[in-house]
Amino acid sequence: MSAVATRREWAGLGLLALPTALLGLDLTVLYLAFPSMAEALNPSATQTLWIMDAYGFFVGGFLITMGTLGDRIGRRRLLVIGMAAFAAVSVFTAFAPNVELLILARALLGVAGATLMPSTLSLISAMFTDVRQRAVAIGIWAMMFALGMAAGPIVGGALVGTFWWGAAFLLAVPVAVVVLAGARALLPEYADPGAGRLDLVSVALSLAAILPVIYAIKHAAAHGADLGTVLLAALGVLAGVIFVRRQRGLASPLLDVTLFTSRAYSVALAVLLIGLVGVGGSMYLVTQYLQLVEGLTPFAAGLWMGPPALAMFAAAIGAPLVARRVRPGLVMAGTLGLSVIGYALLASAGPGDAVLVVAGFAFIYLGLGAIAALGTDMVVGAAPASKSGSAVAMSETVQELGIAVGVAVLGSLTTALYTARMVAPADVAPEVAARLTDSLPGALSLAGHVPGQVVEDARQVFADGVNLAAAVAGAAIVVAAVLCLTALRHVRPLGDETERP
Image (tube, rainbow, N blue to C red; front, side):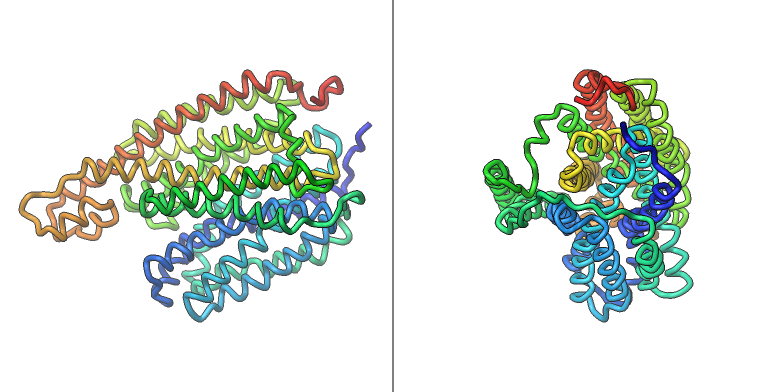
């Protein structure tokens, strides 16, 4: 019989919510800090790309390693080490004197962040053994991460406007102080007593599998696919195959690949991947739409993203409660069906339809809240307690990959349609025509130098690209909903003792 969580466990969840929200905030706070940062440090175009992407790049690369490391040395210990490192590197980031050190700091932040993400969730799985309470706790965890992402532009705008760009990164310091002060009193320690030594060859293979693929996706999104991108992706796939073969032969693998024999585990990961592809790409395009098409400041755009965040909160908490009486697969399929409505709204929006776009994104976030809570719970529930760090890390890696793929694929679709359909007036200089047809920011930079109708046409063409991307994403979400209805129909309501596949 599973033990019911006490006040100590719920207080510990409150403590774990702090680094979780901080990680979400760190993903988006740079959107507001970057213009001021660029003015101070004057990065090149390539350096700009690395400043923006280094954090997520290294988070995704090190998640599996850090999740398994927590199973070996203790999850609370890894959280404490990671939290202290994250705060120290955040201070380094805030006061980085040049671009090169800033890129290094963002990369180190990613490595430190990779210790926090699996630590928080694997500790939750150890603290909440009752399946109903665990699902609610994971829903709160997902909600806090989304809260951080939603608050990033708002908090970043306030701090940068009051102080300087580096102030946005110093939020990690008070969070670290609270977490380090309360960790021993509120959080249990758990390590797998049977875990062997960390296999460094497997660590290297996991990095060789993940990092090239993520880099190839981001490079293709920014510059288009080329031979180098294809070769990098192929290298990552090859390393992944070798990694899996090695794990099967190890007594203490870095990743327990036998977890994939659980249908709930594998399908939940697939649904999370598809869902995050749609959400990642849509979030990127919606924030672009609000700022470029509607002309909102980043701070105002962040405020407009508040209602979708509330929808995500409602789903992340409500879905586990409903799933106590209704099969989780049905709950996930139903909320993904609402997401399809959201994608349909995005697919029909044009310039001047900010309310329609935000409403559509709110429906999309309803689906995200449900699959983040219930899908992650299925992943955690499929793994034994000794392997929860490894299972959680796989879930987080899939979600990071989904976001990267979503931005790359949906962003590229929008860009491709824009460049194909945007036509410059015949009487403008070639360099002006090139800027007009390259991107919407390029067209907006020419406002006042070309007829106003040309700029309005550029906004319309960009909106058409968003429509196309939303239609493609909506079709993928239909597939995810069908997966939930068919492949997860065997998963019984939460707490039903006759279940545990």
